[in-house]
Amino acid sequence: MNHAQIIEIKPESEIAPEPVIDSLAEIRNMVSACIQCGTCTGSCPNAFAMDLTPRQLWYNVLMGEKETIFHSKTFSLCSVCYYCTLRCPRGLPLTETMSALKQIAAKENLAPYKKSIRFYKSFMESVRRHGRVREMEFMTLYFLSMKNPLMPLQFAPLGMKLMSKGKVSFEIPSKGSNALESIFLKVEELEQR
Image (cartoon, rainbow, N blue to C red):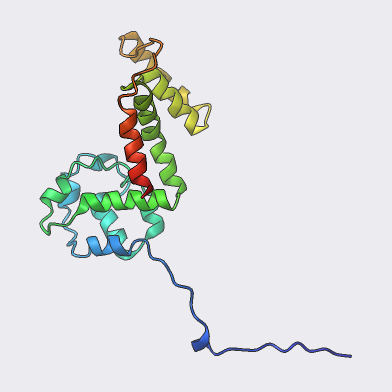
């Protein structure tokens, strides 16, 4: 006996496509009037260290090149100085756009962004504990977060030079006052909203 299976074929018009969530849509709207003049790049004090200049980043945003954008370290290196926003001839909110990119990267838990924020998290953890940065603890936290045992060796010559000039403190950190703890808790509460 031959049992044939009957498959119901629906016309394409009846198949509802899954909605595509474009996380860059709002950001694209923010920079849609960009004329690619390069003033943002010329104004940026960190442009020399960026793999994509701010102008190139905005171009990629306009083109919807999500992978290029989020594999870039450009928005992570933004120091939020507002020079680009102040000097933009179109008056675009470029600094807010950089912040929005950081929020998307954090929300979508993107690996390149997670790697780039380890430095900042280690820094803030030291400040949170002691009310100021304790350099040795900070660098220890950072290197441990990188999970690469050979990474500290790359910085050994710099560390030795700093130690020889007395620029690195070896004091055993005392537990700082919890004066900043309420501020950190308030920020965490605001971020949960």
